[in-house]
Length: 86
Image (cartoon, rainbow, N blue to C red; front, side):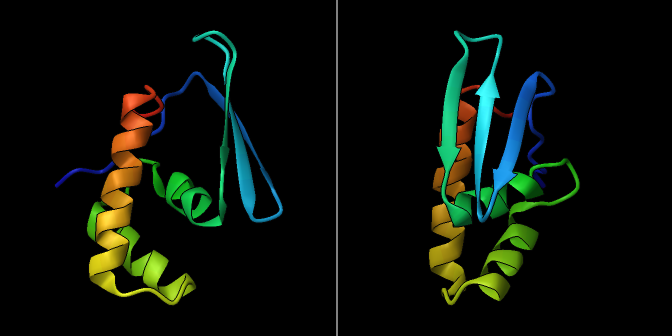
């Protein structure tokens, strides 16, 4: 059971329903997250598995579980490819 965890070196701030992530170690890279991605990002604290993320996203947004799971997995893969997760 995978429980994604954010890299410790990252600074981030939530502004309204969106978030900005600053990676100061890799070229001061900035990432802007939309509302759904921000919810998922906030759940990447090492205590939530994909299923609990799906449940949270389905509760907050009108989306089918299968669609939420597919999108969350794609988002986590993107976070991982950008070295935002451990």
